[in-house]
Structures are given as structure tokens and as C-alpha cells.
Amino acid sequence: MEYRKLGNSDLNVSRICLGCMGFGDAKTGQHSWTVDEETSRSIIKRALDLGINFFDTAIVYQNGTSEEYVGRALKNFAKREDVVVATKFLPRTPQEIADGVTGQQHIEKSLDLSLKHLGMDYVDLYIYHMWDYQTPIYDVLGGLTKAVKAGKVRYIGIANCYAWQLAKANALAEKEGFAQFVSVQNHYNLLFREEEREMAGLCEEDNIAMTPYSALASGRLSRKPGETTKRLTEDSYAKLKYDGMATEDEKIIMRVAELADKYAVSMTEISLAWLLTKVTAPVAGATKLHHVEGAAKAVDLKLSDEDIVYLEELYVPHPLVGVMAQNTRGADNKKQVWMQNAPKEQ
Image (tube, rainbow, N blue to C red; front, side):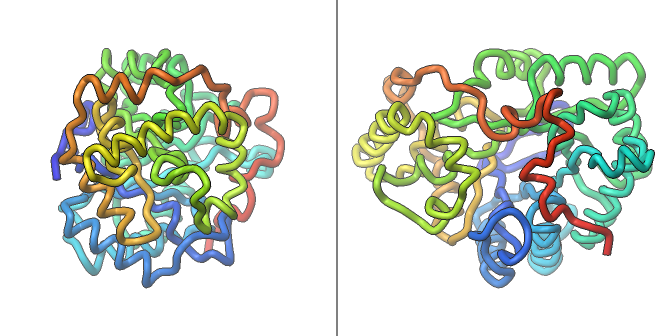
């Protein structure tokens, strides 16, 4: 395994971050395809054995049960100081806004509940899951800085944002003496490269780590078209993100398969090896042992310049999909998929 500094922080993270959205009680939360605690533990243990020290979850994943599974496994299998744990918080709910809960109060409440789920005193990286158009960024940064000063958070990150939002936030943070975002977790893979227009340049200029999610396009970059899995069948949100451009994307997927055959490796390894030339650490989910094993192997695979051009040259512009398409100023007070089964204080 290789390691890198996470942006402007002193966190040494593995080049692969284990995404934990696939862990949690399948009977609660957004997804029906998640795996149980026993399976989650075996995957987390294997990840640690492979040198992965970076784990990403969120309070919203399966009603908080992902955080619980991750916290218990890491307590059993690793020393706290040897792992980098990231979790995320959602924007204020319409009910919280109506009740007068401030952005800072919301962050404090969310963080305390996440720490309770994880069984930890602090998280290494606390991520602003998506832009809250109803809450001033000053209030958000103030709440996050308070958490850092209290020792509950080491560094802060952001997800599902535009480059202008990240630039604005960090400029304000520098001016006011607030904690700055050291990483960004947006949607980026071989089938969705819109991050290259603005975000990648900003991150390179300001040394902000890119830790993209959907690194394998919800499994589409790890198998040939026509092959199916439980997730491909049941993940309606992933279909929303990828079905619209499936014809164009299939041409790229076939090139991934071609290179996989050429190098006698998996499609996962080819797809992640490409992404590793662009970012600090892709967030790769796993619901089976071979998923995390394939992700770890990608670190050792070095693609040639010709390979990279071959994988990239068929890409066409894609419309924004998923969270970025839905979480807009005009729709921020509508019920969204991430609001369903939101975790409640226990």
C-alpha cells in the first residue's frame, strides 16, 4: 500500500479509502443491498491487513448503523491512532430550521451522535456532506471550527460542492481564522469526469485532497455490460445517475475490459489505477472480500500514458446527476432521498 498526506493536513492516508456506505442494516435506511455486521467486519479486517487505514462513512448511511459497524470493527481490529476515520453530516432539516436550530447547534448534535455510533472520542476528518443553502457558510465554518477546538475533529472536509463554493468557503475561513477544508469528496470516475473542468484545478492550486466517491460508477466500471449484481438490480439511485448516458459510457467500459485482458488484471484495477493518477485517494466501496482486494491491487498497477489516453478519449460531457443535480437552491427545501430514515438521537 502507498500513503499520501491528505491535502494541507498531517494525516497520512492510504491511497485507497474504504467506502462504508455498503455496510449497515439493510432493513433500515436508503439501500436494500447493504451487508450485515459480520460481513462488514470481515471486509474491514481484510482492508486493514492490506494496509488500508482510511475509512469513510456517514451518519445517514443506513440510519447510523454503518457508523456502528465501522466503529466496533475498528475497535477490535486496530489501534485508534493507526486509522483515519471520516464521517459526514447532512444539512439542517426543514423541521430543524422551523424550530430555530442553528447551523452550529446542528453540527454539534450531529457530531455527538456520530461519535456515539462510532464509539470514539474524535474523528480524523469531519465532512460537510452537501451544501446547505439555508445555512450561511459562516455559521457552518464556525460550528466546524468549534468542533476542532474541542478536540472532537482533527480536520474538516467537504463533499458534493462546486469549485466556487469550496473556494469561497476556504477564503472566508482564512479571513476569519476558521478551520479550512483539506479535502473534497465529489462524484468522479472514468464515466463522470466533470470535476476536471474546475475542481481539479482548484485542488491542485491549493493542495486540497480529492477523495472522490463512486470511483467504480456503482460497479459499472468493474464488470462488462450485461453482467449483473444485487446492487445493480436494486440500486435505483445509481440507475438515476448512470442510465441516462449508458450508451456512451458502454464504449468506455469496453475499453476498461480490453485493458484488463491485456494486463491480466481485473476491470476494478484498471479503473482505479486510472483514477489514482488524478486524485489522492478514491473512495472504493466493498460488499465482498474480493472488492477490497481488487481495490488494493490497483495501487500497484501503473498505466502508461498511452493507456490513459485510450481510456479517456471517448468521453463526452455529462449532465450533473445525483446529489449535485438535486441539491440546488431552488430544491433545497423539498424532501430528498438522503432525508429518508435520517438517524435520530437514541
